[in-house]
Length: 179
Image 1 (tube, rainbow, N blue to C red):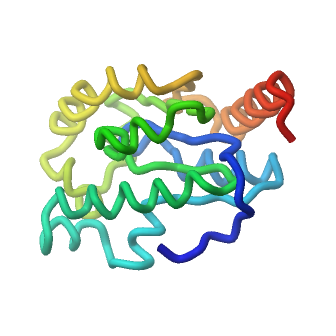
Image 2 (image 1 turned 90 degrees about the vertical axis):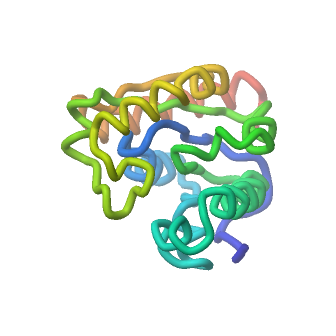
């Protein structure tokens, strides 16, 4: 994986959640607020291997998940705000690697998701909101088990959510004596 522009260390925040929850949008704002780099593992994969939909078509989901696990493993070694792809946590090695890191779950309603989803770029939701709902339902126990905090992004302003997540990260770092 190419080296992200972040110093080595422990992530300040790792964002997880379903497709279209706003992990990238919130993550960029949290990173700016904390004066840290932002790493999006899906973008790391696209930069090195091409569009995710093409990876799925060409090599299958299992190959994509292996690339994703490598990207996450690399990202977690940096002091940054990190956004994971929606299905990353379903890979056992990724879920295990998140232990001890500050994990935030972003959620949204099916109604909000239907306004945000692009089935062309999100191969696992090509069949619409029902497919998205089934996918989220199957992943939600894992999301909840890994997260230490949760924010719903359905209707609240993204800037406000990002501010709250950044404050959560600051409070957590202070409580643990981290920089």
